[in-house]
Image 1 (cartoon, each protein chain N blue to C red):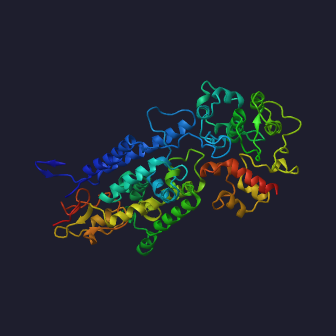
Image 2 (tube, helix red, strand yellow; image 1 turned 45 degrees about the vertical axis):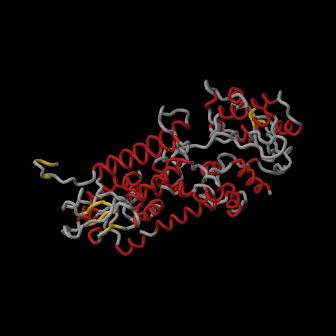
Image 3 (cartoon, chains in turn cyan, blue; image 1 turned 30 degrees about the vertical axis):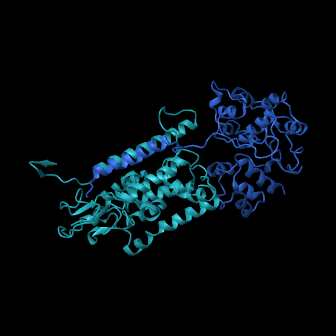
Length: 281
Length: 244
């Protein structure tokens, strides 16, 4: 808020991100409910009846092998998954994994649950996992990605759906959901009380794919050393525990482009942690 | 060039919804399979829709469009009381006939449509029809093999008393041998644990489903639906293993 050109209150978060997250969460939830209604002979008029598989960009990733080799999609995957995959890639190449930080409803739900942990544990929240173990565990999602691509390619079916907490989140009321995915969803939500976005950090195969774009994305998060107070706020608020205060340019494969570390949100010095293309002076 | 959160939010919306709108305009935005069964690729009926490819997600209306069998006839055959039978999804039959000893489901519709239109269909698996469906097929041009199959694969309509002699599988060429126990028949509610108990090895199950063994308590039918496998095919293969 500005009065006479002076900033009185600093926003404590990127509020527009919360709006976007809510929007996509509600959109997917309503479509998932509508899909169930349609399957039972009902449905909400003028609303998409697509299945969750049809609206998942990761479906496009897992079907690439089958599409390249025999020209067909994995069962339950459709052209729409391919379209969404391409759109998410375009955004990621430009801005990093904004799909993870702004769109993915599972990430959103984890953040909601984490609010409980933040109240309970305050500064200790998101600092429970020892750094050494944490560093190793963060590569686990690449193993998950390799496994998912392998089993999908060899079976031609969406085996990962049985373990996918995102699928469980929006299908727990149907008979389509498998018990392992419900258990993994439960564990993810429970861990979210202690750790910010545990699924994203340690297991999400789609986050693993998009995370690679952090290495070469056009818009980067950059810290201006000349004005930085080295107070470490940017690192403390980072949900992915990236040591922003030790970096000049954030190229960490786990960054989700949430912008919480920037001067627009928590960094107390103007134009010090910025999101830009072309570097800083 | 610096970018802040509000323009970024706008860009996210523009890219996603603009991209979807563009792909819709180009005809690329497809969120469901075409409700068009595959055609015969060889033989006398090459090019015609093959009833064996009817899916549980199809409605009677889709079947009517693809095969010319009126939705009302299908509803009458399977005793579906509905003002708009064309919207009835075939997979709904499984719930309606859940209490039946012999399964009525997608396979039954495939069989009925094939017999109704005089089209060939694999008769090695045991697929059953309710009395109503069988009665409607009496006027169709069935060959001797189809007539014999129908005779032994008809079950009472729901609510009617069961016949003294249960349907047998004798007429089909590779049907279950006579000693097959009725209790050891794979139905919609059969779990993997049950077929393990009946002597099928986990390795054989994995070979049939082409994937690691799921939880033994999983219903085979639910698994097939979830994985997009054809339940009738999986059932027939596993049943053959049980009958060995």
